[in-house]
Image (cartoon, rainbow, N blue to C red; front, side):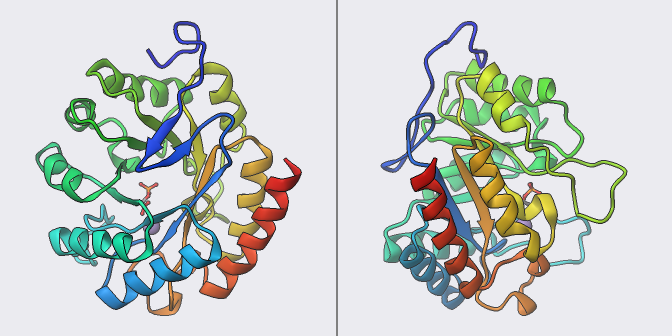
Length: 264
Ligand code: PEP
Ligand code: MN
């Protein structure tokens, strides 16, 4: 179902009016790693909207490596994210971690994210296949492209064809960057599948200074959009501060993105 062989025409995913896919202008999803407070998420939403972002991201359920770190504001985080979405007019994207919370998250989110750590949570994928909202599926940290597409197949097999694939870097021997950004999957997935493909340069690199060049590289490589972490005070962020852009950094990046998309 995900293969181009059986479905030659490109799928366009509609996220509350923002269209993602072949022939559409590349979209920019921006926002903090996690929703931390009303002030933080509303301020960020208004700022990224003004700078030209198309959607707002923010985690409410956070899949953290250890259990003693900030795990997200959960339902309160969903409420604050939805509020920030309404105030800014941006559709909102947030992660869903378990099949049990799909209904709850779908009540608030316009696009439901499956994190890298859950790419092969098959019960979660099946549950997302039964809803009528779009899904952003991130590539697992050690997943091959074949496994990545097979995971998307679970969602489509249940009847939901509104799936966006997202490369976010994979585990390699290299430790100088957080992950290794596999940029070639953007053109490769466009060959193999009709589904749109996005790139997350923030989790792929883990380092603020590398995010702007990799964002532009993602667009040149043919990604249908990018996912960028932005925080009003990255040094105080409860998660992923080192890779989060400042407001000023994001504004500068958006100016470059605009020039780049005119050129593409
Ligand atoms: C995120 O987007 O905040 C996130 C946890 O990403 P990933 O699943 O790619 O690590
Ligand atoms: Mn993050």
